[in-house]
Length: 607
Ligand code: F6R
Image 1: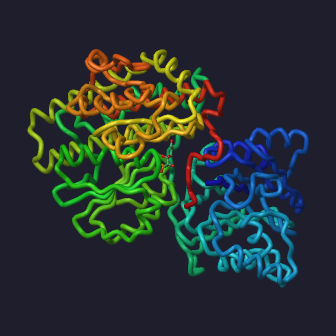
Image 2: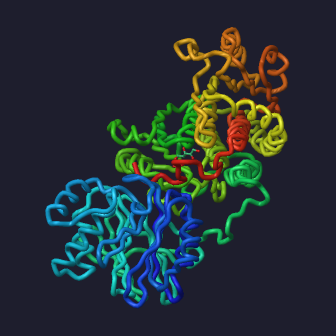
Image 3: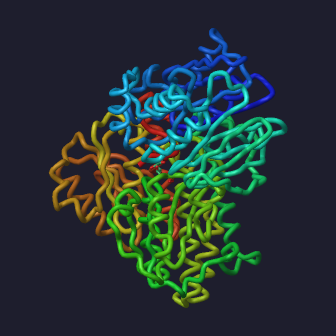
């Protein structure tokens, strides 16, 4: 998390830094700050809360200078206060940091013993102080920064600015992404290319352990061993248009509404031109080479994997193991040959997922990622990166990225079934025809919004809510509970419907609404039996089902939301929409900050 930017430019840096930070605010919004050097004088401005507070401060207390660095923070060490906000300054140095310095306590003790005192609770301040110490010892800025870098353990992306140096920036990365943007007589640094997309399309990605000495006319990159390194300059294509809400009250509402369109695009992308089979983009994947698939992700992306496990096992008869990246990376799982390691990530920068991918390098026979950001670290480090084509997702709670992930994973499972001879041609043709019809069904689902809004208003009064589902509705129950928690702050949990009686049923009373996700499929009767057990104990049920399900089972139910009929294989994609809409309208009713809920950030680059 945290976004960092830097600029050595031709124009006043402050407004350009703020615009770049706006593009990085998805990484955190606890505080923001910038520092500039103007005629050799280093100065900074910082404000708590969203970037708009920093912009307001700059109106009253402008900051001049054509060289600068900026930061938007997701707090790790120390509360979101002005003194903990970046840039951190020690004498002639200002530094911005994304990541965590794991040995900061030892460094703090060492600095304290040398007489340095601390004014913040952050790990970053030790970087500024250490650099100051080396400069006090007589080192020049570049040497002092490199000496400091050699002392740091953990994951970081850093940019340093120095008093008296109007034409010097030092950037470094280890574990957290950092890119350099090349302008005409200007140079930029950013946590990602999007931050610099309004400035340049010429980007160099720093690699692990790289540091860069930047002036307006030169970029010198050194690798972890201090040797000069040649890193490719790429021309990137990033949508330059500022993303807007297109008339919706929130980005989340817009992104929910976009799903029929973006899913339609994803389906077209993975279908052969004549629509008769799945066609994976080059270099393709040969599923006959694998005995199993290991899928790893975090949060919502993990629930996409959980759903895909059902598809891969049922349709392609390929065993799938799924895991949360933060667990997978440390439990040293055996990943033999003939294993396809598959990583799912909207941002492509999630630290734990990236670490899990790196764990599989050299062990799995192929590393594939399903990502939304094609230039991301996870995409770049995979053998094959499959785009989900959801377009930029701004709302912190993932919606369209989730359903696009599901769509691509389903098509991947069908491709596996096709290649492994596990699916009859006419069955595959039927699934593909169903997929082509899916956007229409999703539009019809969005028409159910008024019913879901009413149900959500009732739910918003609850303190605790349970979600139940069976089969592919079980991961969906998890996704529904996660969405509700993160934006409405209502406590919600998901259970496999059949698991309820093994403990959680003790929670049921007339104050705990239970949302049951159950299309009229082969498992419907089983789920309805569990729903009856809830109602027999005074539980208030919201049933999300289809017409046949509502006819059979809505007696005694508190609220029923009727979805369009959908082929069972596609049901998880369609039933994601009512889960999202319930969470969205509950959050609106509660008056929370829907697009930037408390404590969260869109891209989780620390573990
Ligand atoms: C929830 C949500 C998060 C992300 C998770 C992984 O709405 O967005 O749970 O799914 O942080 O992020 P990515 O997909 O970027 O790896």
